Image (cartoon, rainbow, N blue to C red):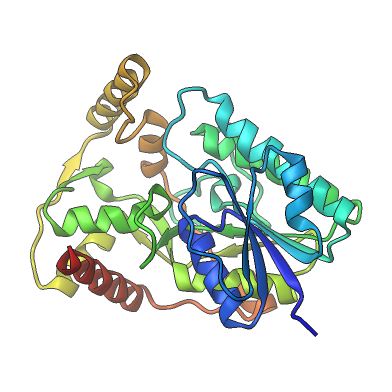
Length: 334
């Protein structure tokens, strides 16, 4: 008997690419959705590519035909869009299409990749979890807001019987595709090269950083053990940006320059980048909403996933060592 097939959206992205590989390594058959222009590995034994888009329900129906489980990772997770409605069209309408098509197909489990930012920033000194109410109704970016709307719809459908489990990655880093989805690793590379000396807010604000290997394993555990309608934060250690980059110094044995950027200066620079994007169509390095994101804390725990799923965290030092070794090999290969 052939292994049951899993349907994956976002399989050409940083995390999705690694997830597809992990599923194949476990003997699963995978059908992954990819837009016509997307770069994708060649089809192989137990790997099939379905050409389509999450906004095209017909392509979703064809893709899910014969599949028993679904991973929905596809999202617009970028810094900026010329039309802000892009975030809501892809992240909300696209997710709705996936969920409703999966309901029609009668799949037995859907793992939906949300994001930790839907829980909102954490007060100084507080470590948040899935049960902590969002402290503010304000959203810093269209990405954050659109993913919050999509998750509300997902949980509402789960309450009506659709077998959805939501996972919430924190800031992902590690070896893999060098895309905007792997922006933390790209930032580490820039810093290691001496090209990222300016830290918003002097780099004092805390974030949670998860190694991509752990995140992929967390997705698989959620498929196997996650409870329908539940949310699971898949993260790592909490650390300030300043200390994260100091760890790069320690692991490489090289001292890099860090220059604190006061909030007004950082916001002015981001505003100029956004205006340049609006007027000239030049993709911005950062936007004001994302500067604000780095000027608040996002300290979270993955204790629930550890307790219920058996999720395990790779120590930050070890994950960073692997990532830097990979970045250095990448440079040598060029």
